[in-house]
Amino acid sequence: MSDLEAPLRPKRKKIWVDYFVQFRWILVIFVVLPISFTLYFLTYLGDVRSEWKSFKTRQKEHDANVEKVVKRLKQRNPSKDGLVCTARKPWIAVGMRNVDYKRARHFEVDLSAFRNVLNIDKERMVARVEPLVNMGQITRVTVPMNLALAVVAELDDLTVGGLINGYGIEGSSHKYGLFSDTVVAFEIVLADGSLVRATKDNEYSDLFYAIPWSQGTLGLLVAAEIKLIPIKEYMKLTYKPVVGTLKDIAQAYADSFAPRDGDQDNDEKVPDFVETMIYSPTRAVCMTGRYASKEEAKKKGNKINSVGWWYKTWFYQHAETALKKGLFVEYIPTREYYHRHTRCLYWEGKLILPFADQWWFRFLFGWLMPPKVSLLKATQGEAIRNYYHEMHVIQDILVPLYKVGDALEWVDREMEIYPLWLCPHKLYKLPVKTMVYPEAGFELQRRQGDTQDAQMFTDVGVYYAPGPVLRGEVFDGADAVRRLENWMIENHCFQPQYAVSELNEKSFWRMFDAGLYEHCRKKYGAVGTFMSVYYKSKKGRKTEKEVREAEQAHLETAYAEVDQPAD
Ligand SMILES: NC(=O)C1=CN([C@@H]2O[C@H](COP(=O)(O)OP(=O)(O)OC[C@H]3O[C@@H](n4cnc5c(N)ncnc54)[C@H](OP(=O)(O)O)[C@@H]3O)[C@@H](O)[C@H]2O)C=CC1
Ligand SMILES: C=C(/C=C/[C@@H](C)[C@H]1CC[C@H]2C3=CC=C4C[C@@H](O)CC[C@]4(C)[C@H]3CC[C@]12C)C(C)C
Image (tube, rainbow, N blue to C red; front, side, top):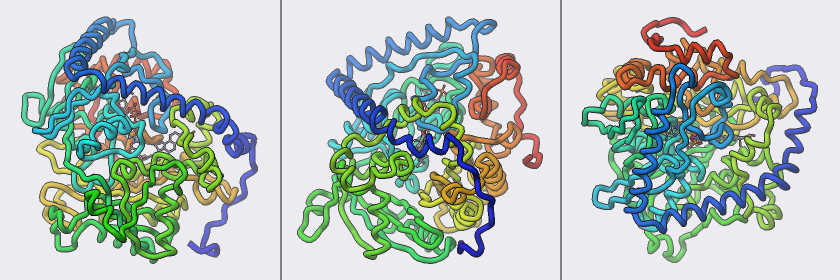
C-alpha cells in the first residue's frame, strides 16, 4: 500500500510499557539468555539420560507413571476439587494464551515424567513416544537413523502432547496433513481412570478422531504412536523470488507445490517441503525442498549451507537475499533445516533483541540463542503480556488455498504485518466430521491442490508488530483480532488455539464443529471432570461464577447446532 493510500491514524502517546518493551533486551541478555542456555543444556542431559535407558526400562517406568496418573485422577473429589488439566505451568507452554484456567480453581495431574521415546519401530515405521517428548529431542534420535516424524514442527520446545491436543504444522503438511493426522494410535487415560488405546478402526475410533484440537479436554494422553518416514541427510532447497501483487504472490505460492493438472499425489511433481515468506505487499520468496543424499549434496559445484551454526544469518533474512540475487539452490543438513526458525523465533527475535541479527552479535553470542519462550513468558509480567495482546499480533489463519490471496489482502489492509509465513496443509475429509473440516462439496469442484480425500488449506502466519504500531500510531489489537476472527468464520477458516482468541462461545462453535467433540465428551465421561475446550480457550481471568458453572456442567449445549450470525 502506498503512503498516499495509507489510512490516517492518530499518533499514539508512548507510555512506560513502550520503553519497557524497547529496553527488554537488557533483561533478556543478562538474565534470560544465560538461564535459557543452562536450561537447554540440562534438558539435553536429561534427553541423553533417557536415551541411555533400554526400551524395556523406559516401558517399565511408563507403566508405573500411568499408574500414578490413574491414582491421581481417582483421588479427585468432584464436589470439592476443580476440573482436571495438566500440571504444566502456564508460562512453560509455548503459546500466546494466558492459560487463565490454570490461574483459577483446577485439579492438576502431573505428566512431567512422560518424556521418553518408548520405541522406534522400523518395520511398522512408527515411533511410540510420551507426550512431553519435544521436537528437538525426537529429531536428535531419529535423524541419525535417516528417519523422521512425517511432520516435525520447527521450534525445538514444542511437545508431542501439545501438538496433538492443539495444533501442529510444518512444511511437509501439504503431504501428511497436520501433526495429529500422522498419529496412528493414542493411549489415553479417561475420566474414570481407564487406560484406552484409540485407533482409527478400533472401538475407540470416535475418540481417535475427536482428540486433535480438543486441548486435553477428553482425557490425558500418556503415549502416541506416530508415523515415521524415510529421509535423507540433506534438504535441497530452492529459493525463488516473486515480485507482484499479493494475489500474484498467492498464485506463485500455490504453483510452487500444487500442480495445475491436479496431480497432487505425484511425488515427482510435488516437493517434500514447502514454505513461502512474504516480505512486503509486493515481494516474497517461495521455497521448495527435496530430500537429498549426502553423496548428491557433496558433489562438486553444490553449495552446502549449515544454517544451524550459531553465527549464521537468521534463516528468514537469508531467504530474503533471493530477492536481490535471484533464484538459488543450496543443500541444508536435514536436522538443521527442520529447526531453521528456532534460533530467531521466526522473526519475533528481532523485536526482542533488535541487534541479535548483526554479525558481531551472532559471532560472539549467537550460541546463547534462542531465549527460551518459557523464560520470556516467565519474565514478561502482566504489562508486557497485555502489550503483546494490544499492540502486537501473533495469529495463524488456516484458510482454503484458493482464498490465500484474499487473506493476504485482508491482513495487509487491516494490520500491515510483514514478514508473513505461508505453509500449506492437507485438511482431510475424515469418516466423521471433526472440529476442523474441509468445505462441503470441495471434492466435486477440486480446485488447485485439492484431492479426492482432502482440501488444500494454508497456514497464513501473522506474527509481528503491525505497521501502525511501528509508525507510532493508534492500533487496537483486540479489535483487529476480533475482526479477523469474523473474517475467518465467514471464509471457512480456523484459528489455532495457542493464539489469543476474542471469540465468544457461540462464535467459537461457529468456527469449529462441536458434533463429534460433544458426543465424545458425554460418552467418555469428560463432562464434569475435564474443562471444556471453549473454557480453556477463553481469554481473561475466570470469575468464581464461571469456575462454578464449568464445574457444574453436566449437559452442555452444542452451539454448532444453533446457526446464528457472529456477534
Ligand atoms: N509449528 C507449529 O505447529 C507450532 C505450533 N505451536 C502451538 O504450540 C502448541 C504446543 O505447545 P506446547 O507447549 O507443546 O503445548 P501446551 O502445553 O501449550 O499444550 C497445548 C494443549 O494441549 C494440552 N495437552 C498437552 N499435553 C497433553 C496431554 N499429555 N494430555 C492431554 N492434554 C495435553 C494442554 O492441556 P493443559 O491445558 O491441560 O496443559 C493444552 O491445552 C500447539 O498446540 C500449537 O498450537 C506453536 C509454534 C509452532
Ligand atoms: C504457530 C506457529 C508459530 C508461532 C510462533 C511464531 C509463536 C508461537 C509462540 C509465540 C510466542 C510466545 C511467547 C512469547 C513471549 C513474549 O514475551 C514475546 C513473544 C513470544 C516469544 C512469542 C513469539 C512468537 C511465537 C514463538 C507455526 C504454525 C509456525
